[in-house]
Length: 157
Image (tube, rainbow, N blue to C red; front, side):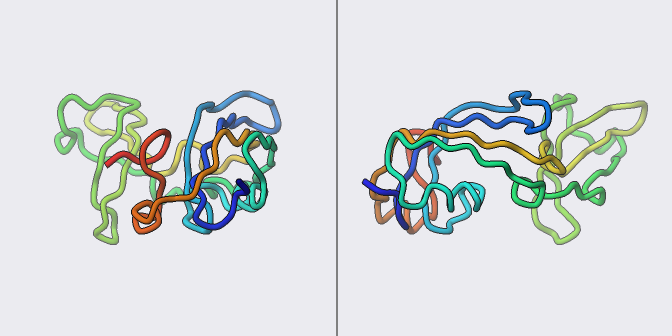
């Protein structure tokens, strides 16, 4: 089956730094093909019309990956506002300036303040995305309605 709009696609992938070759992440993921924003747009374009077994590697500029760092998402909060049990490397949800929930990485706890970063850890980096298509199938009506793949390496409700 060819990858077309509303295909459920499962990939084995390796994400690396194109300059050093250092591996940043590996694994499996599933996404709904056809503009649902479940994977990088350039990767989706490269996989259009391909079939199970197809392998490719794509160099992604900062803007095509997780975007540039936004220093306005780096903040400090008083340790007194920090929930117990969360440590450096953990995550914290806070309301952003727009009133919507935003997730922050806990970067450092120093004295009376906690340093948070709302950027994706790979923001500001160019990436190399290498992948192999391990499965292609028609998406279910429910997956299309929810705009993501269910089960396997997709989303679990």
